[in-house]
Length: 209
Image (cartoon, rainbow, N blue to C red):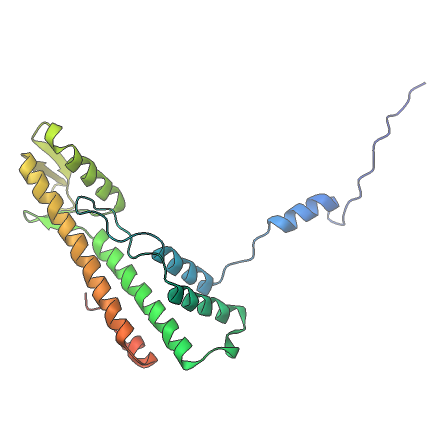
């Protein structure tokens, strides 16, 4: 006599999924992020980090961690998207939000200008994140290199010969100077925005770079 093994019957939903798998799918679903949510996230990321590092480094982040005032301003932007902003949308709140968004545009412009690179000996060199890492590595090991060395340029035939350590140091310090100047200019522009007293003035403010 054959004895069939008893197996529990699993109830299925109308779409052929078990209740447990349906629950799993629901828990893994992510609500779409709004444009404003993504903007707030970018502002928060821009505020996390440390100021421009030591003079011998090209890596950078724009500003210190967000102050409590800036965190409150970001919270105001988020509340507007959640639908409860009408209860707290004072003129001061709106002005603060306008300043945060305008300063975010200043930071974005600074990034674009840094990534555009710098010139040395009438040649154009990259300052992309990867290029900055390469310049740091070359400069750190400049004394041990065998010259001449060839690096990538952004113009001409795409190559540039560095004859000695002094030239390498000159290229590196030029790049450092460009990064520092752009960051300083961005900070000055954001200070100017902080001094504005009306939303119209903030919205009309233009980055002259």
